[in-house]
Length: 316
Ligand SMILES: [Mg+2]
Image: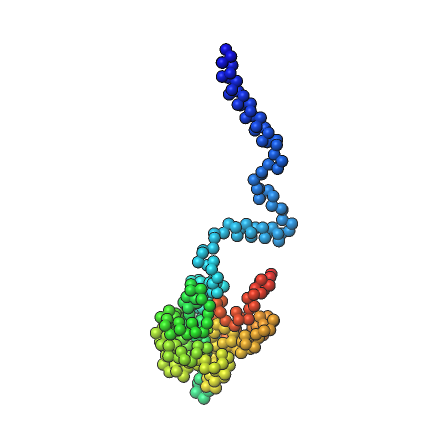
C-alpha cells in the first residue's frame, strides 16, 4: 500500500513543482514583458499633408526593388543615365526631332518664296543658306554617352576625340536629318555646318557625314569647325558675308547667339534665370528662324548648374 502511494506521489510532486516554477518565472520578472514592435500602431499620425506625403513617399521607397549592385558604386555619369536612355530609346524624342525638322523645312520654303518674290530672281542677292550644328543636331553621339555610363567614366575632350577616331560606325543621324538636308538642297539652299568639333577631326567628320548619306560635295568650304574659340559668332558672321541665313538649327542655345553662352554667365548666381529671360526676349525667333533640338545630356545649361546645390534648385 505504502509503495503504491509513493509511486503516485512522485509524478504528482513533479507537476506541482513545475507549476510553482512557472508561476515564479512570470511574477518574479522585474523587466516588462517583451512586446513585439508594432510599427503601424506606434507610428505617429501625420500632423500635416506634407508629413503625410513624406510618410507615403518613405513607404513607397521601402517597397521599391533594391538598386542593382552595378549602380551602387559611384558613377560620374549616373545623372546622365535617364537622359541617355530617353534620347536613345524614347519615341517621344524621335517625334520631337521630326517635329523640329518639319517646322524648319516649312520656314525654309517660305524664306525661299519670299526671296524670289521680293527679288524676282535670286541673282543679285546673297544666296540662301541654312546653318546647322553637328553634334546632337545632325549627328547622334549618344552611343558615346552610353559608353561613358556603362564604363562609369567621366567626360573629357580627349576620350570623346578618341571615340570620334575609333568608333565612327557608332554615330547615327538624328531622326529626320537626311530628309531635311535633301529637301533644303533641292530648294538650292546651301547647308553650312558650324560645329565645335576640333578642326583636327575634319577628315573623320567628313567621312562620317558621307557614310551616313549626307551630301559632302564641296563640304570643305561648308564645314566650319573649331580652330580656337568655342564661340560661334565669328563663324556665323563669316557665313553672313556670303549667304543670307534662312534658318539656324542647334541643340545648344549658343548655336544661335553668343548671348546664351555659358562663358559670359559663369559664376553669376542668377545665370540660369538670365538664360531663361533671354529665351523669352527672343520669343519671336523660335520656330521662325531658330530651331532647337532637345539635349538633356549636356550643354551650356548643365555647365551653369551648381550640382552641389541641386537640393536647393529642386525646391518647389
Ligand atoms: Mg550640338
